[in-house]
Image (cartoon, rainbow, N blue to C red; front, top):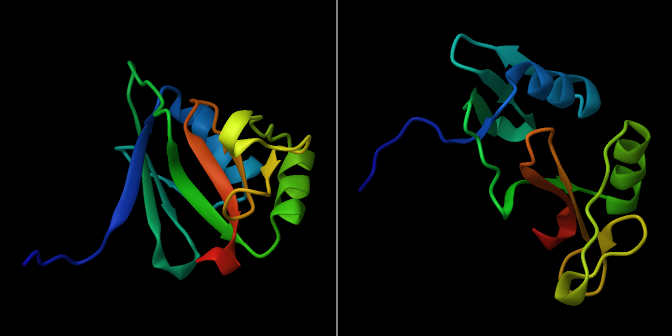
Length: 126
């Protein structure tokens, strides 16, 4: 069995300064700059580490989900802060605000400046 002290998520970005501004100022997350990258300690003990990678290529899937009580409110708040929500057609069709309401949990996707995909998803689903 694996013995561990903690767990954390990590992903790369192509511009650490731009990422720091986005995570800290746009999303309002507690960002700590380290020699290796950005460390973010979220509510509930979840930790994120963001590291620079010159040849970064964003994943084509969601790398991190923010569980929220009300997706509409989260989308409105983030949109006002300059976040643009992704629009999808087909099975995960989103509405004009970028929210998918009819195929699973209420969820909306957006990207950071490096193209990494995130979501806000209504917490009762979890």
